[in-house]
Length: 396
Image (cartoon, rainbow, N blue to C red; front, side, top):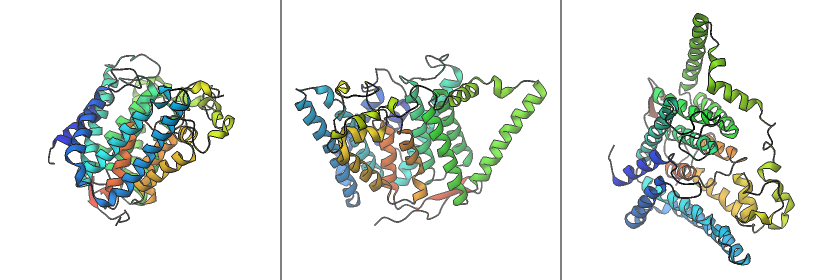
C-alpha cells in the first residue's frame, strides 16, 4: 500500500482520537492533526474533486449554512449571545473533515477503506490493551472512560469504530480472524463504558452483520456460531475443572448485566429526561429552529442540550435543517444496497438517546459511504479472503 502524507496524518488522527487532554468541547490533540490534514487537502487536492460528488458537496454546504444562519440570527436576537453560536464551529469542522475524506478517498476508495480499517484497528488495540492492563486513569470506576472525559464518549467511540470496520471490510481482502479481533476489541471498550445505548446498538449491529453475512453467503455466519460455541465450551471446561463460576466472577460481565437489568428503570431512561419534552413545550420553533445554547430559555426537564441527535437537530434547526441532514445521509448511502446501510443506521439508533452529531468519526463513516458508492463489495470466505462480488448498485 502506497504511503502518503495524508494517510499518515489520518492514521495519527484516528490513533490519537481517544486521548482527551482538555475539557470536552475544546479541540483535542487529534483535532490539531486533522486541521493540518484539512489545510493540506484544501490547498493542494481540492481541485481534484470529481463532478459526481458535486451534489453531495452542495448538500453539505447547504446544511452547514443553515446551521450558520440559525445560530447567527439567534445570537443577534439574544443580544449578541455568542454561546448560541459556539456549536457552529464544530459543525463546520466536521463538514470540512467530511469533504476532506471525500476528496482524498475518491481516487483510491478501496485503498482508503483499507487504510481506515487498519487505522481504527490499531486505535482499538491500544485502547483495549490499556483497558486490560489497567493503564488508563479511573481503572477502578464502575463505568470506564479510559482516556476520554466520560464513559458515553468511550461507548460511542467503540460503536463508531465497529461500524467503520464492518463497513470497510466489505471492500478489501481481510482475514476473518482479524475482523473478529476488531469486533472483540470494539465490544470490549463498549462493555467497559457501560453505555446502555452503545451496548444495545452494538449488539443489534452485530446481529445485522450476521444477517448480512448469511445473505451474502460469506461463511462468516457459521464461523461466528463456531466461535461463540467455542467460547461457551471453554467457559464450561474452566468451570467444570476449577469449580468456579467464571461468568459470575467476571467483573465486566456482572457490571454489564447489572447495567442492562436497569434498562428503562433509571431516572434518565425516558424521553422527558433526554429533553424530548422541549419539543412539545415549544412548538413555535418547529420550522426555523431555536439554535443551540442558552438552554435556560426553554421549559424542559433538563437544563442542558437535548440528548438526541435527531431531536436536537429538529428542535435547534427545525424542519429545514433536519430535512437537509437526512438528504445528506441519503446522498451518501444511495449507491449501496439497503442492507449495507446498517453500520450507519445503528449510529442513528444510538443517537436516539445521545447527541452524537459532533463526533468526527460519524462524518468520516458517512464520507466512506459516499466514496465507495458504486464499488463492488465482496465476501469473506476460503480462509478469510475477500473476493470481488457485485452487491452494490452502480452510481453513474
